[in-house]
Image 1 (spheres, helix red, strand yellow):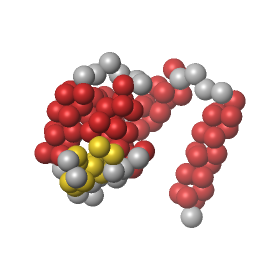
Image 2 (tube, rainbow, N blue to C red):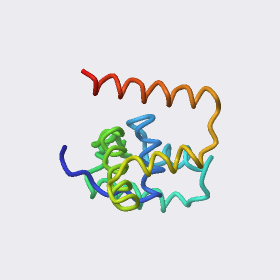
Image 3 (spheres, rainbow, N blue to C red):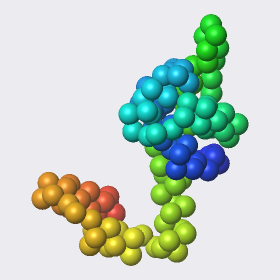
Length: 128
């Protein structure tokens, strides 16, 4: 996997909007984020510029505005961030991390069943 840029928490918020709906203008992104965050539009433009500089976003001119689109796949960035977290916090060892989350998370019976199914599938993959 190619090296992906490090994404800050604020940049994640912007990326989530663009992943959900590519080809938005800075104003449209600001409108969507204003429902969740109390950020000035200039702050959002700064975050967009950082993401472009990092290679996470691309843009194209559309009249007098720019339309932004992701250059990185959400799944790839999540994988990288997850691995980074695992290395930093749990020394790269998966079981303590999973045990921590399972013990501390509030999970519905359906979520517990989904987790069991994932583990069963993982176990089946290893048995082959």
